[in-house]
Image 1 (cartoon, one colour):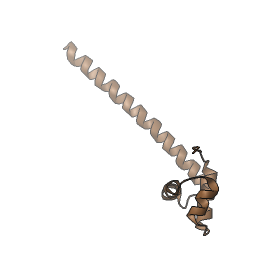
Image 2 (tube, rainbow, N blue to C red):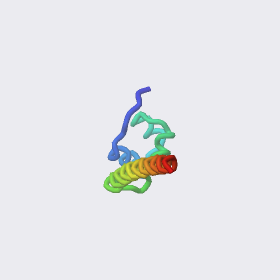
Image 3 (cartoon, rainbow, N blue to C red):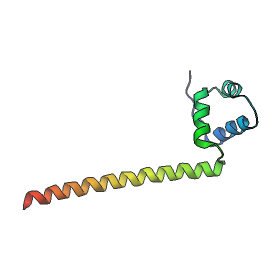
Image 4 (spheres, one colour):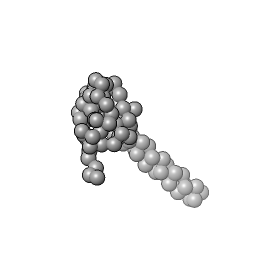
Length: 88
């Protein structure tokens, strides 16, 4: 089975069809995805609009970058402390 990447707009459209009353099995067959994918999307994106979803993705990316920066700074601080403790 070919793995597909769905855009935010496609995910929201599929979820709106499900909210409108379409059966999950029919949606999964129509879009070529599993039931688990649908329910994962529903748990994560239920009630969101496309603009809100894009903002969520941007915030998640910013959070990832900030965590990486903090991790790098912590390593730098640890290395400097070890270096200073050896000199004295």
